[in-house]
Structures are given as C-alpha cells and as structure tokens.
Image (tube, rainbow, N blue to C red; front, top):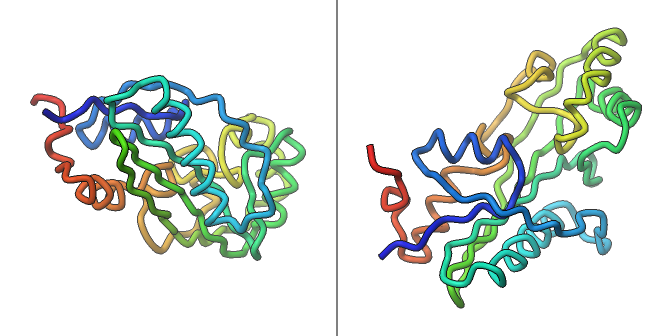
Length: 196
C-alpha cells in the first residue's frame, strides 16, 4: 500500500505543480523558522531547511510520505530567500538585472525510518527591467512570497530571459528529481497519481 503524500509547505506554487503532475498531496505547513542560516552555503541551506520541514511534519504524521522543500536563489554565493519588504524586492531586482543566478531547491522525502534527499539546480538568466517596471513589480507584493523575488510563472516572468535546466524546480519542486527520490524509496511516482 502506497502511503499518503503530505507536502510540508504552504507554497501555492508547489501545490499547483504537484496537482498538475497528477498528485493530490495533503498540505501541512511545518512552521519551521527559515531565518537561521547557520553559515551554510545555499545548496546545504536549502537541503537543511527541507529536512527540518519534513521532519517536523513526520513527527505529526507517522506512516505518511512527507515531502519537505525549500528554495533560494544563489547569486554570487549569496543565498537570496524571500524579501521582507517591497523595497527589498526592488533592491534584489536591481542586483539581478542582466545577470545569471542559480535557483536551488532542497528536497527531503521521509517514509517511516527511511529518507531520500537531493538538491535541484536551475540557471536563471534575468532580463533588464526598467526602473518603472521594477517599482511596479515590487508594489504588487508578489515577490514577498518568492525566493529571490521572482518566478517564471507570475508577474515577473516577462523579466526572465531564460532558464537552463528544470522549470519545475524554479516553481518549487523538481518533478524529475522527485521521481528519482521516490524510486530510491521503492515508490513509483505513478503509484501516487490520483485516479483518472
């Protein structure tokens, strides 16, 4: 019997992505503090945060298949998470304009006493929005919910010139990586599909 999938995240993008892939996870928000970076590099940090989220929910839902994820943009070795204010978002976009960064998403799956984990990486090529476009985007408050102050499926999508790698990773869950991690636990992703 395949265990029930629980997403340890309140991200609407992650939930939308998983549902679009035929999965129907229960959502249980972990409430884990994401501000303590412990001096870790971006890849180690997103994996540590994904683990904390998954473990917090695994304690509440024994017997379920728990997926914890966390995303951040790595720009010149600095981890950029969600901006705190619209001004922070605008400042981030002035740094991003015309540059490349790497969106990293940590994935941590727990089933019982077993786990599988990995980090997805996608290169982002940022465009050069005008001052007026940056101000207008920051004023929407959309970037306050997004790692690195951007998304490829929202209002900032026109300001992203391209990506190299997995698009689903940028939205919050690398579906190809998730399939591989499930396989490590002996679970086929197709076993988690909701009935047609």
